[in-house]
Length: 480
Ligand code: NAD
Image (cartoon, rainbow, N blue to C red; front, side):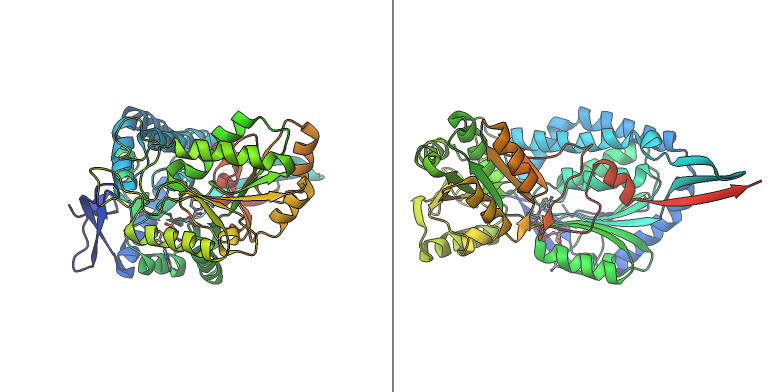
């Protein structure tokens, strides 16, 4: 099956372009082919979006919200089918894909509140007989570019807010797993989203550059690696657009001696190995403070050893494969390099195979001890099922580690001390903080995004920031 683009309400397969296979990463089964569309396809999509804008903008906010209410109901109805398809193209287990879809639905729910969320402010008599009002208006066509690791949820961090506020959108999903979101687009159409309001162009770098450069696109939302986020931020910014670009991460999890050991074991193991480590909020380096270190290491090894690998559609599977053979090689290179740089491999997932799935991109849970900040595995994002362990002597030392990290996405502290928790949140300098929580994922009504090398821009995804990003606050001063 060739995956079509969605332009002006019609499914269209671009001809004469390269096609890449979309495969089940556990079985290797070919599921579909995705077109590497051209800049001219982006141009067609932008024209469709421009044509749809005036009528959609004039549609009252309550009516735009009603389309999203219907979409929410359809997503609920199809949740299971979407989760199973997502497991097939991504590899994570069905509990994880259900969770992802639920998080996506919550963004649709939040965007349904647009009549209130989009309200402005007024003040009478800013001078005698003169009134002032600040209103929010949509801006036009937005570009949305998303990564492979949450291919349903991440597009829903953006486009529901963009269309709720009256804009139109050109979306470029990840070319690695674009199938399930196609169904979401189909459901949005069934919910009554008019032709041209949401357009989808599949592809890679050429499509991204056409979006960042297109003179009729007013803003770009991007999520992916920091390397590409930085490029997109610079390039779209230079073209005069507003940009929010969310990048990669290297998340530290700090364990104090007074932490509850069972909470640490459950939260850290699932943070590091959930989704085979392919989450921007995944724990990467676990930092045991003082005497916390040794018992913590034993428990984490026990927790990691109990994980069952397999096809995510099978019952009882904790961990699926990573997305591709290329990504598997990359993760294994990191483990090799960690070993060369002096880390001890306490648990080695490099040779793991899963019965009945010889073509799967498997890497078993891997634990490296003695990970220092000057090592590649102590600094770089690995994005696989690899836990680094390190010991420091105090909370102060742990904070110094965070300060030295190039990334600022997420961090967690495990403690039963309110005072330590307060000190930590005050000083960590990281944007998403978990206290006795392994995956500090803000819900739809809160901002999602990092700082330092994890985020380029100022307004984040979701929450009030979403409304702010997709609208301009315009001020009217009146005398009658
Ligand atoms: P990626 O950067 O390879 O790709 C992201 C998007 O950019 C895709 O649509 C891709 O087609 C496009 N792209 C890739 N290379 C490009 C290039 N050279 N020029 C222009 N466009 C290009 O990221 P990925 O591997 O799909 O996703 C994983 C990354 O995303 C990880 O670094 C992860 O931390 C990050 N991520 C961050 C968050 C967050 O909230 N900060 C959330 C999810 C994922």
